[in-house]
Image (cartoon, rainbow, N blue to C red; front, side, top):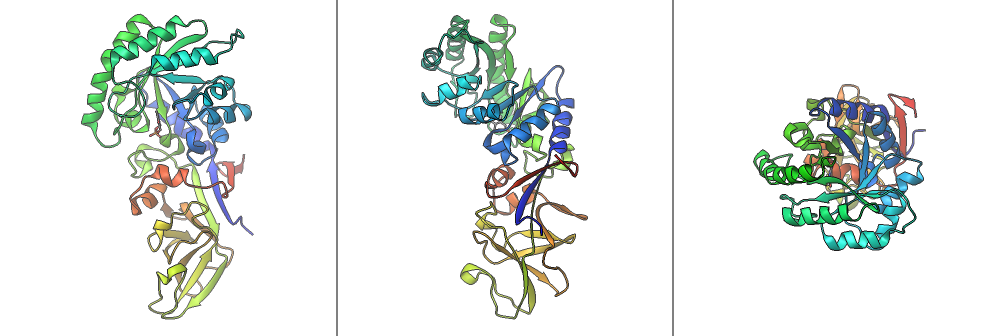
Length: 377
Ligand SMILES: Cc1ncc(COP(=O)(O)O)c(C=O)c1O
């Protein structure tokens, strides 16, 4: 019997995606693999290991806890925590030997206070300029320089490691990205003049693929390392291989007569006799309820429509003819079956969201099963 629902993750695909992305980088630029949000649903530690095997030099997460989970999994390479850190989180980040991001002098003071002078290696700090994302970072280059000076002055406890920004719409608006770059570049010049070894980074996946002048010393790629398209289109256009397949199986098949319904609220009613398969995967697994009557699944290399309301634990599928499917058949929600393929991007577009949210939304109830091109990992 197949697993009720599973996310099969091809680690070799992540490795190849990273290698491919690296091959497209401007001279000398390195790649940081972003493995926050449960590794975009793929599982952070296996994704991190695969990305490192593909040539990533740094791992990036959003939270202190995500950094310490990587350490607990035995992952040793540098980890950057990109998010804000509360007083409670700072010791966790430092305990994980994480690199951190600063954009205010009070934060640098808090950081110094949180470090016990045990003679450990310095805490590496990246200064963040907000060039238009309007989220974290300072909008003022002068303030960013002052923050950099206070970090440099706190040597050897702190080490000025990086200067960064983040793009708001590299997936869609080349003009705004250019405007952000125009704000960032003078700051980059100023910090490089004073601190020549500083690592400059800005690009997310979209900028990495679309804007080579944003590569600087390092790019921070998340969605693309998982083989997904930051523009929410077909990842194959960039030579990216989706690493995750989401499958379930046919648990029951029954005849619906004209007028019979399937699921809560009777939001689908058979207009003529047809066979309906029940598939044990639902919104508690990450199949968004908004996909009610608005998704396909693949069975036996063919597409069938999801009909009726997505329940917490089940969906129903109109399979038409009696002999179309059998109990036990594999049902693919994300992935390929024969010549048919359904991407996370396609599912996202149906409900007006992005592939990121579909992948991050896969819940812990779905076991992640790791392999390398079909061989169990
Ligand atoms: C600061 C920062 N850098 C890089 C990334 C990676 O973005 P993407 O997954 O689009 O590559 C993220 C993710 O949202 C981020 O917050």
